[in-house]
Image (cartoon, rainbow over the protein chains, first blue to last red):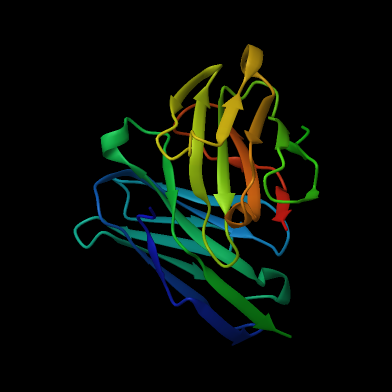
Length: 113
Length: 113
């Protein structure tokens, strides 16, 4: 079973534009993480935001978390063709004492040069 | 530091045959995960180890799947007998401790014919 639901399922933008992906989840969490997956490869960790944090930045990435709405968003600014990948949110549910990451179904991002 | 190493990279077998996947986590990482990923979907947790103990195997189909992590380092995931529906990518991941980000291998793509 997957806790996170991501929106949109697919996103196509031009290089230089911003990309926003959303994630909704169902239960209380310890933290929420975002991962990237290039075709045929494993997932790569991008950023972790704890339940008591509202916003976090890492380079061109900005993540927000709204625990009252049980949702998170990932913003990639000034996108590049190399950002083309699938992006997954993953929740670490509070009920599990941590460590059990449940992934959403992902957003497939295509950045056209 | 070396990443998570998985082998084989690809495996094609006939249904009812056995198959095994091997994972070498990052040195010093106590927690090890096996995930299954179907095409276009997010990873689904099969089993999680802390050292050599399986702390969460609730999603592992125990009638045909088995896993072990001897000495708390390398791990093997086995399917016997394989079914057509087992065709997927099997991902191994490790983390330094329970709540830290996951590091993934590139996966084993299994095709059952």
